[in-house]
Length: 224
Image (cartoon, helix red, strand yellow):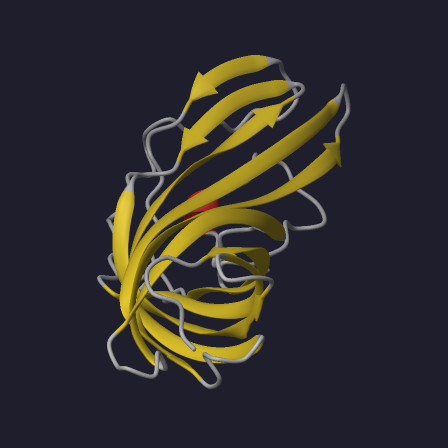
């Protein structure tokens, strides 16, 4: 679930021109999915304190149809975030079948994606590959099924761009489409995150809330 400025809605109407994504205050996504894995290593004899490391791939998307004079113009937007993380975790009852845990990770986030339009005008805007540093708060329950396998459910809240925000000066004279009634094909230059505040651009806070379920595998000497 994208939140803050990662989430956003397209305008209800387009006006006379195509949408200017350089001017958008959000990344215009409404939902997404993820897949990932995390390794945990106990650093005390009770197995409560652990160091963690993992990766996560998130794909967020949003779309909008605009009915125009000759056809329908459809925008499809995708924002991908690949995350590499490391941190610490505390498990409350590692010897029990149900083991609640909480954790905090430092995360390196790599952004990519694209915006595509199809219909009476066709074009693609590639999102520039950029990186930001953030943190992830994590909590859940590990359910032990036997000595080697279990199930895990949990929730994460990720602040993805705490460090490294940047805004590039936009060249508004290049690759601009203004005729919204004639069929055409064009490619735009790369679009940056533009998440640092300046005189013409508000800062963006790119966060998400993630609910997950998965499988746990236990290695090494079992806790007794």
